[in-house]
Length: 355
Image (cartoon, rainbow, N blue to C red):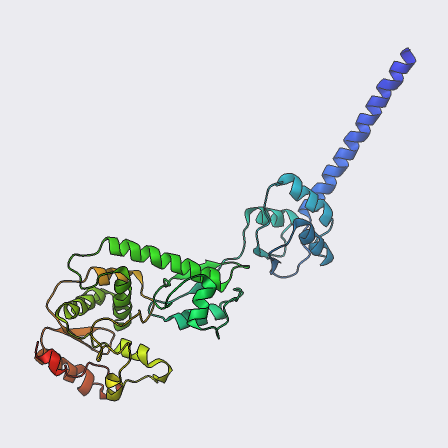
């Protein structure tokens, strides 16, 4: 009996030693695996595309000979982060990085963030062109799609102009042009709603959409931010008294592809839904994508008495209360200094003179 007990004791000791040895060996192998340097000679990005599993990822890395013992790394990943989701994106890798460095980036989802800038005053067509040029942004809305087809693909209704907020948007691999546009649309809705809730009293515009239309004209009329409120004041006063807006950017928008960089007097007389030299009130839709400042100016125009303004040629304007002073400014800035680039309003129509 004593011999049996002694045998069993020795067996347990022996088994424990073996188990400890195996555990130590396994720990050492794991540490070597985690600390192995990635076999890359220059900075690279690892693409994790939609549908990639950890098993497939580590198998691919081993097949590329970027690391060894990919299966052990997969098991370690599952043990360490059993509920972690492998985030889609581009993971930057540098020579000298270890397998553990890669695992940390994967766990944290440290993907490359790219940006695309949609500029204030651009049209929907220009927005789509910028998205089409964006590096590694998924393209789901071909440029040959019509505006109506694009809006339908986005699950939206109506004319697209004006409804997408201009800003710089971040994206990562796996995102698409549709994702950016929907984000820009939600942002514009929020900004417009906030501005409309804080609008001034006695405005000549009656809805958030009319504010968006007016803001787009303000955006296109000036490159000087501090003038937006004053220009909004001119347009608001004109709308209140029934005076036509007579603003060149609306004419240009209505001309479409026929615009070649210059407005002729014949263009100012050509009837289009957007020619505010011909139509009364606002055009039917926005003519561009306005920024927050233009929207806020549209709903909170600066008080004053000016009804006219003319471009000086440096992005700023001279404002006038009456036609005589306006014509004097036109001669100074539009005719004498740069007659070849005439962009001012023509003399008001008899209907306006009567006012």
